[in-house]
Picture 1 (cartoon, rainbow, N blue to C red):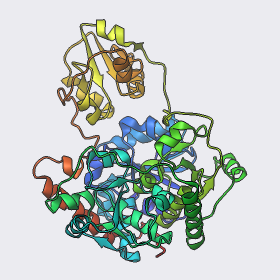
Picture 2: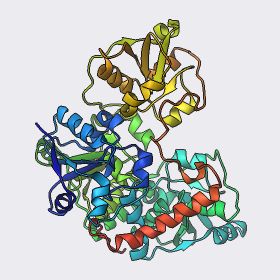
Picture 3: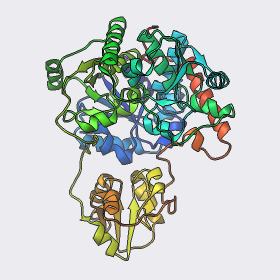
Picture 4: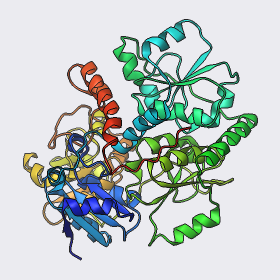
Length: 522
């Protein structure tokens, strides 16, 4: 099968014809962040096989690849065809051609989700407090509670004093236990704006009797006000009582009725899965990671509900597909599905009394894994003239890598091999060894190469030492866009720029006909 080429006007028409479509950008996250098409999902060429199986599960769906003139889209499209996808095209001229046709270009990541929250705040009139007012409320001993609606890991990294970690989809589920009095004021916070707005509006939509507000600009706004941001906090919600669960379920049912969120049963899900050749279907277990790890149904991906709303494009790249939000409580699935539905997805909820069968964290399946020459940690440690190339995330490499290893991006190996020192062999590694195996299979026969079996995790498990820091960078660290608080230079400038960018999204959505939002004010 040959890869087709389409122009910008054809892509524009396809985005509006009602059919399923996946628009994928083959670049790394840093260049993607600088300029991209609104509806595009970032699927870097070097990680393609580890992403598309989950993000684009239907092999016959229309797929359009783009880049910004780097030639990556053509390579990605051909690789996707080799993996069995049947309708793959490339946008001729890429992002520049889209812009030249008069269509808008965006910066940032997870733009549909972040823009959606801004439009929600505008349409629903979500109330908020700023950092100065929140500081006054805390200092006065006011009857109030502050919930941080990000993941626990983000909360643990930086938070506002007195905050409790209650990730987005958990807010309604755990509310009655955490806020027994209707007189308590509730403030919902995140790092910036998105999850503060969505979290606060979730509680308002659920009809809690309390005054609920979002924290304007989150921990960044708190920092910019000159107030102390904490690190290492551990306060989090406990188990849900039977009484609180009953109240939460009633509130979720009222949300389902008001926002017309359909619920399905297990036979319906089975029937939909049987139609996978004609219907793009995503099934997400939206519970907390620790619950999923304790027991889940085989093949069901875990994405906590708040994170799924926050970065939908990362997990579901087929616009027009169906999303099933699964829980075991009748609350978190509905609360997640109602937001996805307003975002423009065909989203439904499914509650299953028993979610067991497998344990442990979700492992993304990798497509196209070929036999590759392998060595183990002991063999690698014994080699004296081998160069180790680490293909993991640049942040993971900096946090800890095999001593002497070089960092590289897999899609840039052709260019970046020239920067490596001469050696008898090259040994690829990555966190779990999957990217290493893909690279070794790809380069076998062209160079003496091996993959480290089990990757860097196996090296660590064998008790071998690590080195830290960005010590040897064959490739520029373009795989991960830095957060505002990680930017070089004056952090406050980066925070102000980021918050201004978020706020401006609401105005841009007002004149962009590609967005699919269907906001229903609570």
